[in-house]
Amino acid sequence: MIDLHLHTTASDGLLSPEALVARVAGAGVTVMAVTDHDTVAGIDRADAAAGARGVRLIPGIEITAVEDGRDVHVLGYFFDRHHAPLAEFLEAQRADRRRRVKAMTSRLAALGMPIDGADLLARHAGHAIGRPALAAALVRAGYVASVKEAFDKFLGTDGAAFVPRQGAPVRDVVKVVREAGGVASIAHPGLHRDPALLDKLASAGSDLDAIEVFHTEHDAAATARLLAFAETHGLLVTGGSDFHGDASGRAIGLGRVSLPAIHFERLEQSARQAGAR
Ligand code: AMP
Ligand code: ZN
Ligand code: FE
Ligand code: FE
Image (cartoon, rainbow, N blue to C red; front, side, top):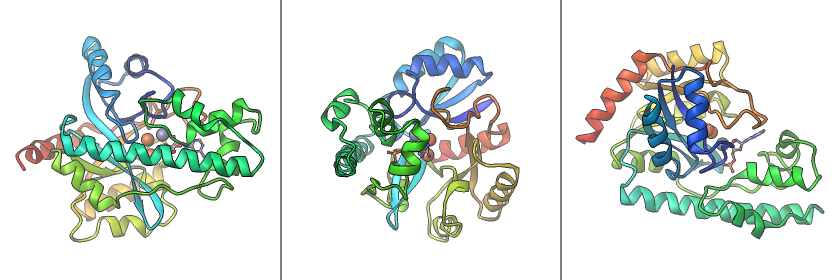
């Protein structure tokens, strides 16, 4: 199995890099990519653990771009994780995450649900904090019964405490990934609210390399539609489970969702050429 979409505690996953590798290897995965949100901090430890288990690890990331005020997740693979401009870009992304968490705690306080934002940021020091940390805090404080309820009522795009991200559009994020020697893919396009968005992102002049076709939340019809879209637009195909941990409250596709080898080989081939770009 090939799983190119996985999260660790470096962002909002529940497992440490070592524990994730153990879980993933146990599920039969032989090629994996850790794709934490806006950070590469989990990769070195995951790489060491993967090496010890005979699992191949590809450097990965999931960067939040902002397109017309909406978050669009961009996956990057095979880049140089020590590339200075990339590191600088990611530091700014994490700073905006902290800004957003603070802004959302203010909204929550105004709604009568105070949570200690400074404590939350301290707990996640050195990690890319995100809304799941706020959701967990709301559950701990007893304001909601579940992470799902926290997102549905308060933290989701239509939630009462929602604050949008600020940052670069997809085009610029793709550029940062490519300049670091990597290839860029649009994450879980089947979840986009606006079905025309993918057309726009893949349109002429875009440097986009790939789209994520295989994903836990893509059903058979969405997978087939996206595969055809990739073919029509000359895009490569990526895929992975987007596993955040067994207790994450999300559907679990680990061990079920796999990128077919032919697509991985094409991706790797393209990345080799990108290295010489
Ligand atoms: P953020 O990175 O702060 O924008 O938060 C996005 C993350 O929150 C996603 O990557 C998911 O892990 C998680 N998430 C988003 N929507 C939901 C939801 N409805 N239920 C549970 N987790 C969610
Ligand atoms: Zn996440
Ligand atoms: Fe995502
Ligand atoms: Fe993800």
